[in-house]
Length: 219
Image (cartoon, rainbow, N blue to C red):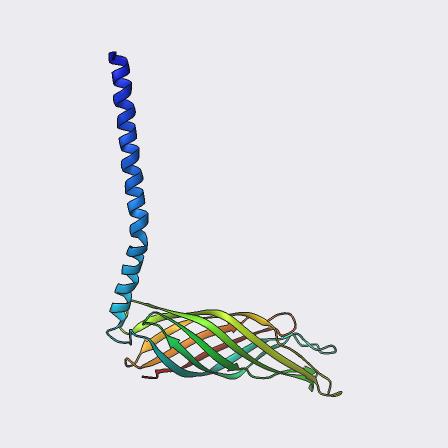
């Protein structure tokens, strides 16, 4: 074998070895990534277990606060229907661990009213029923965590014209999402402050609830 061919052989061999090493390293990194993610969330759960339950359990809760509605206006009304008033929600769910869960809930909003001058010409009843996944993430302050929810809501609205008594209703499925903070008062009781919205559609409008309440573990 000539010197040139020998050098080319060693060069190609070295390149092949480097390529194999890099591929093996990348494959090992890819295989380790899911385990690293699992370990990260396991450690988060362990850190939260000091002040909240880190096991499967059912829970129930309720919130009260202020509702905000953006409704479709009635013909003959000069209102842009933004209605504010009291509202509440009741929920029940299952917590898989300290981080993840799922819940079913009912929210009642303040009924909206539309006026022509000083005369009320239409009223609308609003409520939602939602099914959502929930997630918590610990923040730097002891016992505090961020709380997020994402799912679907049955968004019901029934509008009635006062003069004629004619009513019409709509009940579409829409996105439901919420963001707030959770304070673990004890391992079984959490204080929740939450902003939640059922997106609705052009017939129902959107519905928001800004609230505070309690979740209680049923164990």
